[in-house]
Length: 299
Image (spheres, rainbow, N blue to C red):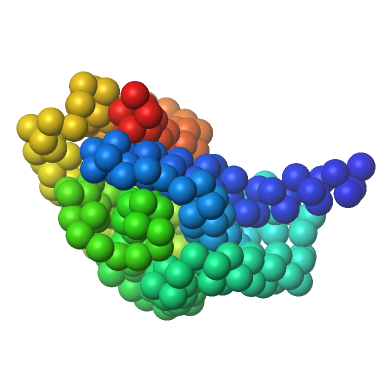
């Protein structure tokens, strides 16, 4: 039975939901860009670009867990993480990280030189965030993650251009700004929920430096900024399904903020359980948007 637990732990260590979001973002915006510009998708580039980016994301996630091991061990809410639970060792994690790093670079090399450079930049950005940006970067560390996440939209468009950066990406800039702003908000919210463990190891995250409430007000400011750009795209004529996704995503984000405020006060009990669910809620909110973008691209 131990080998089964190890397999499950390896899957968890690679953050499968994050990989799903990466894949969904690339496929959705590849199809969407193909539809609005009437440029066909070549399956070879869709497969290679998606796989290379997923492995890039997995390396960053695994390396992050390795760097956060000491911090996670001091947070009772993270006792079930693969490394903290002891099912996997740090050495196991490093082997997995090196494998994903190699696969990411290897697959990117089959796409184009430009795309290979994009992947290498993302890998360096993730490595720098895990080692410097998160423990000492304040809000700049959050913005490192946001830029990397938002790049998925541009990478989706690069499927259409066969790995090159061209004018095709320009119409997607509002969506890029939305993604950057939303992910900055989400990173700040996560840092607020991680404040206990970060304090224990001396991390200088935004909530640690300015406090939970000030941090979240900054995060909510980024969210409003992003939603303004998202709502502005309603007049672009990108289709009814896309517009529906914009409205639903905006409503879900705002409802989530009100729920978080009530637990910060706290008006509602069991904050720890809410925080776990809220992390998933924030991810699902952006996934809902990607589903509508994909549907618009397909139909």
